[in-house]
Length: 437
Ligand code: AVJ
Ligand code: FE
Figure 1 (spheres, rainbow, N blue to C red):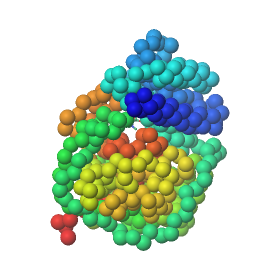
Figure 2 (figure 1 turned 90 degrees about the vertical axis):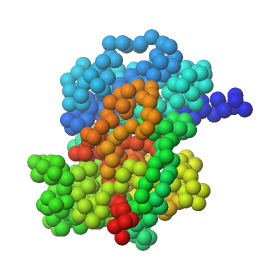
Figure 3 (figure 1 turned 180 degrees about the vertical axis):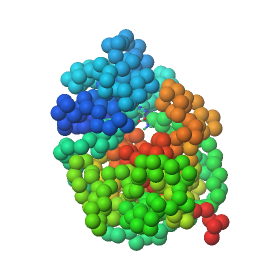
Figure 4 (figure 1 turned 60 degrees about the vertical axis):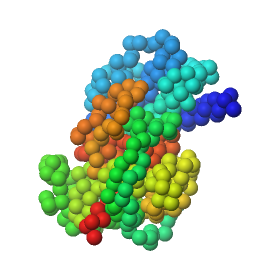
């Protein structure tokens, strides 16, 4: 009945917010204050900025917009407005010191719990099915992934540990899967916590194409390096070629050649690059060049989503590759349970109906597509989440990495970044059109 539905929604919102805060606490309590206030890379904010920004977004949406409350500290809004201050500038702002940032985020959370208890979860579009609470839990989890990237960029001793994923036997399935052409329903109009750029559901047509069964592995990527892939302009988009030459890029970020082998630094530890793991920390230009070298191309965003969600037997799209159930540990490497992707061929229970593996979790996957609105898009609840980023300067990534929490992950979820970015947990898989047969 309606009362128990509302209670289930409240429980889901509470659980999602609580899990996000536990992760934020882990990521900000595992280092000392100087590591929280330092800027570890000009690409990133100080961790203490993310912490107070998480609290400030929660204040704006849950306390002020939903709860109708006055600002707790109106003077700090502008410090934590991502559009007023680019990341490089944030360390020089008069930010709340770590203890104050923690206390502020905790005060907001305490009040948000009271708002959640009495909110009408069918009152307005903002609170419908607990949307604002889900949006804020996703926002915090997205910044937790951002903070994990900051941890990866940080030099110095290891601060985080996690068990490794289970080893997997070498993947022996077919290298690629045929995805049938024809229409499918892309995006969603029904997923209650889907963000504005995933909406609305709309029919898309794709031509038949082949897609890699697993993400491209380190071993496959090393073959591209060893074949002189970084020295051959034939494989590179002109801007990508100019970029890798100017910055002398010749391998994924964090890789280093040591005699005959490749090493990588991962969360403070240097280790041999594992051959069976999906390649990570490559930019769009590197993914695009690898695909051309391999005689293939990146999948478009629509192709990726059809490969991930389309069930040819039921002729409909699923919420996730494995079906409509929320992600569990058997389906995908999500939620920072591990601090690395799992070997190619892991999580067979998470494969799509067409037989494509590891679409969700492990590494974000670059697609060929620019970040553009779907037909019928409406910015909600604020233009600065998606709308201001639409255009050709951003490329879409799909699927989510090991650092994405299930609450911020769906078959329809869209991420985007500049094509030169590679500090993110980004990999890719390749495709080819069927008519090339
Ligand atoms: C969707 C990951 C591109 O981190 O810039 C966080 C998410 N938006 N706060 C980002 C976001 C506002 C966003 N990405
Ligand atoms: Fe944010």
